[in-house]
Amino acid sequence: MSLVELIAQADERGLAASGLACLDRCVPLLGGDDDEALRPLWAGLADTGDWGAELVAARAKLGEGPEDDEASVLARRMLEAAPEDRGADALREWADACSVASLRIHRLLDPARDAGSVDDRRAGRTEGMPPLVAAELRRQITVLEVLAGHGQGGLRRALEVSVEGRRVLRAVVSRRARGRT
View 1 (cartoon, rainbow, N blue to C red):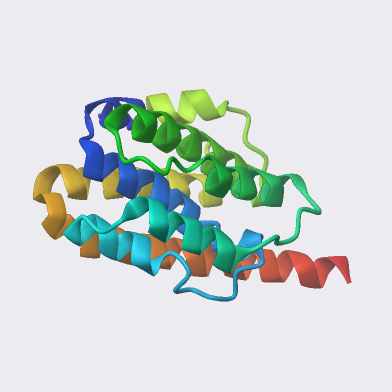
View 2: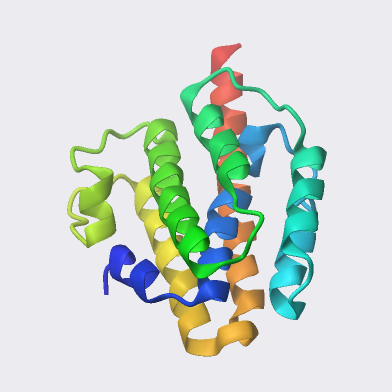
């Protein structure tokens, strides 16, 4: 099943986790050295915490990070666009936008060029995809599949996938910064 189809079929928790996972993987672009900045939002998905209040707190923790390049701007927009209401319609729109933004970020940071469009990748046309983009697409699909198959019980695995992706992106960002100096 394509990523677009998985997002279309996801429930509220799956949509919130999908968008949150994309955002979580991009924390290194937000100047976020605090890997725990989004943890209360993850915990809130498990126990129906106060998503709106936790989101406001996460925005404050991540503050006004760097916006010196397109990838950072896209990551900041994901955080700013997160809906304070956990209604399915708002979450679906946000999860979809986060999916697109995260794939674009990974395309921007991947040294290999991608001839396909982000829409093609999300629809399942994956031939010739560069490795960083392919890994991000797999992570997005995994998060949605795990939550569809295990509901709340899949949140731990979704978080693990997100943490792995954040480590990869942090290494890419660090390598890129060293190359600029």
